[in-house]
Image 1: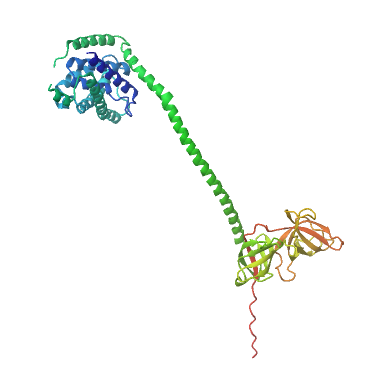
Image 2: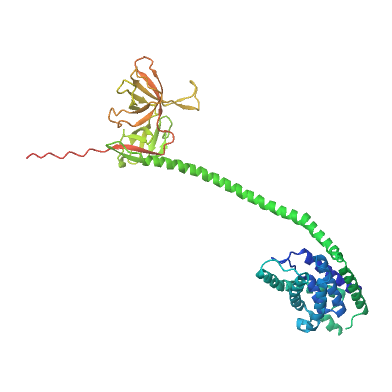
Length: 172
Length: 291
């Protein structure tokens, strides 16, 4: 349990630091959604209570470090964690590529959710707003891939997942 | 695989804590405290590592840039010197373009090849044209500013010119205008030549004396800066070619004549292109036929 929880904590802290320190997307106040990627990874790879706990923590970190009202992102990520479960089969069983695709979609929906929650619009004209949202798709994919890869490494270190060769050798 | 039960407890605890935090105004400040060390570390790295490295790189780049600029300045200085020479040549050629020879003469432009010959005793220059171009001994040599000298020796393709400043140079001149009350004041312009500086001892310094206008009428005292022109007497030089300007005058040792120091009108040391005045041969008279 301790290693599992430690892996989750490390993943969340590193993702929060990366999201906080890296510059925002050009022309928008949005940032690379690494915490959303962590939530997506846990939603696609881990049991429901772990996924929900990760989504709750990722949402709290996003809101707390991002100046959003409490519950704004946490509620969204909790709902997203539940909603992604049925799509696990279509998202390559939680591989980094699947996490990347899931994170791209979640990043876009999360931005819409946040702007609706705080009743604020993205700055600029209509095309700039559309461009800003559209930019979230590739940036979400990149952040999701990075988060999925990093969280996967931590999971292997914690012993939660095993390489396929090892499973074949041990017959378990 | 069913997850252990403690995950449910953790989730429940997390939800309770989160909801409690949501209800407070600044309940999520822990998140900011969590990322604060990373922000602090990033700032420290930016200030103490990235900034010095960037400054060192910038300094290295600036050193190279300074070296480039110094090279560029040297090149531009050389260009400026070269352009000064070109501008001086341009001025000289423009003046030469406006030079018109006296009536009955044509001017032959000649490049100056060398000065003083193989020894420095005579004040001579060598021209790059000679007999083939119509030059003859005695022809006057001048520049737009005034007379320079006369052709002394001629070969097929070169000519030696004795300058006015040579001690053996003699040119018939007159004052222009003559002093009041006189129709003309004429004399013979003699070259000052050169002499070693100081008395008797051999010195490296060599002084050129000014030209001397001799045999002037004793009572005709020319004002300083009076122009001196060729008088045309003797038929060697056409009349009216500027020669120099009076610096001062005095009676000769015997009191018979007056002598004047003359500054040459032309710069005799910086000659590059000169004109030789060649007299145009008068057309041969048609043979008279007797009916």
